[in-house]
Structures are given as C-alpha cells and as structure tokens.
Image 1 (cartoon, rainbow over the protein chains, first blue to last red):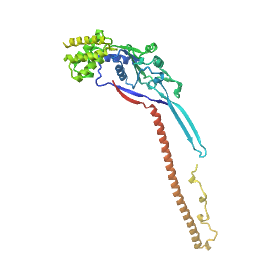
Image 2 (image 1 turned 135 degrees about the vertical axis):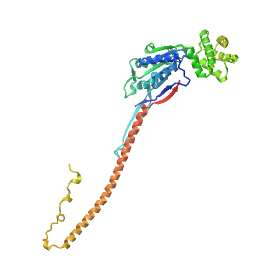
Image 3 (image 1 turned 60 degrees about the vertical axis):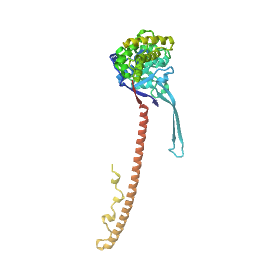
Image 4 (image 1 turned 180 degrees about the vertical axis):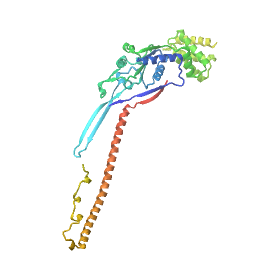
Length: 304
Length: 101
C-alpha cells in the first residue's frame, strides 16, 4: 500500500503585497512560459523577490502548491519517497473450532514524498534555492521535465516503476548565483530544460511601493530611505549591495520609534547601523567606516 | 410451478365424513350416532387448530429472530465496507495549509 505523507499549500497574497508594473510584467511572462509547458527558474541575488514571485506565479496558476527548500542533505528519496517502517498483518482463522489457522504477513511501508505527490496529482512545485541540494539529488527532475515520466524504485510496489506525470504539473525554481555558502552549481541539463529569468533589484517605484506597504511609514520618508539605499547600492563601494530588505528594516524601525527622516541624527545613525551590517559579509572595520561615510553623505544630500 | 401451499396433501383427500358416505341404510340411521361422530370430529379439529395456533406463534417468533439476525449482519457488513472506504481515502486525502506571501 502506498501512503502520501504530504501537506499541500494554498498560497494567497498578504494585504500588504503590492503588484507594481514591474512585478506584473515579470509574473505575467512567467505564467506565459508555464502555459507553454516550460518550467520557470527565477535566478537572482538575495532580496530580488525570487521566492515571493514564485509564490505569486503559483497563486496565478491556481493549482495547489508543493514547496521544497533545497538542502545539502537531500537525496533522491527525500524528493521521491521511500520505505518508512513496516506494516504487519495477522489473520487468526477459527472457523472450525478444532482447527487453528493463522496467516502472518509483513510488508515495508512506502510513503510518497512531495515531488511524487506533485507529479501524480498535477500540483505546482516550488523548488526554492534548488542549487542548495546536491546535483545528483536533482537528477530525477530531468526525466520529469522532459519525458514527463518519473522513475521510481521497485520498492514502491503496486503502481509499478514508472509514474506518468500529470499534465497540470508545473515547476518553479529559484536560485541565487552569487551565494557562495552552501550552494552547488546547477546541472547544465536541468538548466537547459527550464526558462531562466534573471531578476535584478526592483525598480525605484516598486521599492517605494513595497517599503511603504510593509512599514506603513509616510510616502515621503519612504522615498528618502529608498533613495539612500539605492544611492549606496549604485556607489559600487560596498562588498555586498544593500537590498530592499534594508529599506524595509530602516522604515519599520523608524515607524516603531516614530522617527522622521528629518530628525537627522537618530535617522542617520539608524541608516548607518542597518546599512553597514547588511553590506558586509565579515564586518571589517574599513568597510564599516566607508559605508558609514557614504550613508552620512547620502542622508545629508536627501535631507535637503 | 406450484407453490408449496398449492400442493395437495393428505388433508385434501376426501374422507367418509367429508362426503357423508355411510354404510348404514338411511332408514336405520340414528341421529345419536351422527352426533357422536361429529363431536369426535369437532374435538379432533379443535385440537388441530390449537396445535396450528401454537405452531404459528413459534414460527412467528423464529421468523422475527431470523429477521433481526439478518438486519444485524447486513448492518455489520455495511459498517465494514465504510471502514474500508475510509482507510482507502485516508491515503489520498492530503492535508492543506494556507501560506501567505
């Protein structure tokens, strides 16, 4: 007997989710590729909205979602399923009172994992940060995406070694090409089977809209924060460019402390704290000082 | 094909009494003898009626018991069927969880 120990997700947008022209454009293009029968891969650095866009596209597709987060420890059985425990059956037959007839049977219990369930029922698979899994664990995806057939171990029993992939099955992948910790290179064969959409930082309008929606800070203050963060990003002098998360951090902190962007001292200090921490991987003193100097200049420029 | 109650039995054979045939010539017949034989016949039929009544009661009771047993077994079979259906669908029923982004 095959069991399915999976929870399926129903994505829905938060009330503060904003769909600007940029987001609408990217998500619409992704839906078109999906409709054409190709899986979509959102590739971009941290803070470019890959996972949220994947969820949004999945929501637009309208099928239940199965979410997998790439992990170094993953093996094929973590995706496909495996034998977990035993099932024992014992029959004691006393139909004839003087005859005792017993029958015992013990079989391994097969449990389908998330990928198999998604392929079987035609759900949307979101494989977040798939390059964090070892390439050999992702081999199973090659035949699923091309031949629309899934190879399964013989231990699965009754339904045989092949599973025909449901026509509604679609896959959305995300990966970060610049991440250097705990990632593997993606297989050429796998990348070749999907449409890769390279995502960059959001445009100014989207960054303002998202930061405003998430923090509820005044539009004017949000615009100033976004300009400072973008200024630092475009300066090209930091080790790691600040993302929209930095804008949201500063805006939320300012909202909680009720600090306006006009109160230069405290506001500038807050910007320096957040931006020097998010732009450095190791936290060197030289980098901190350099960032603080730039931020101070940017705060002064945008305050006028 | 005839049903069981349509088949002729020993009770359907005509007897001397039922046809009123007598070996005594009509002129020598006495009403006392007729009275005696009819009384005998009445006793016999009354006895038979009471036996039949007893038999009817017993049969009714047995029929009731059998009907109850049949209904019980049918219910049990239906319940077993329902349990099987539940276990079969349980494997397919996937849990759902909302996720907000």
